Amino acid sequence: MKLAISVCPNDIFVFSGLLLNRISHELEISVYPIGKLNELLSAESFDFIKASSIALISNKSYRFLRVGASLARDKGPQLVRRKKSVSESILGVPSLASTGALLAKKYFPHLEQQVFPLAELSGLLMSGDISYGLIINEDMNRLETLGLESICDLGLRWNEEHKALLPLGLFGAHNKLSDSHVDAFEKQVNESILWAREHIDEAISLSQSYAGEASVNADHIQHFTKDAHLNPKLTYYVDKLKNSLNLDHSKEYF
Image (spheres, rainbow, N blue to C red):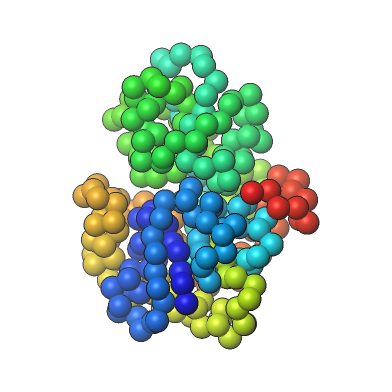
């Protein structure tokens, strides 16, 4: 079975038990930036894949799983700008198909979105190359140090408006897979999450090695993976997201 996950420290933490072979498996695991994962959905090259929520639920070849989701609880994607920035309307986003980008379009339709690698967004803001950016990585915890300020926490705004957790990213299983294969995968991921929570130092260290930096924040990771276990309420949250964006459930958006 072929699996594609995000290089995001949160996903590496969730899958650390599998990546380190602490949980027995026969998965072939590949790691990509989230923007690339959204593009790979249409190629249908993977049995299981992580993608932005909107990209996944609008793709007819995959069904979302109850495990491994990235949910925003009281904190989410930050729409930020450089302090004393100029008034241009360019908003840098890591992917037009990301859940954060769709929410930014909903709440701030006057901003013109352009795609940049997530790892470069803070630097582009600091240099003044763009005036606004969608920050969904750990830079959101050091905005003051970077000379940036948050205009809106899109996750918190959505949480308060809809009284639900915001699904940022979801795991999908290809429709060709049997229920037994999907159930077995969900069980493996859940076991990996439990292992990571019991071996936090080892799991965080692996996240740091993939991120290429020692500043990976354990509290940040645990916040965004708090609800990654098998979650019976996930369908409710996903339906809330669809309805909030007035999506046509029969249409593929990306």
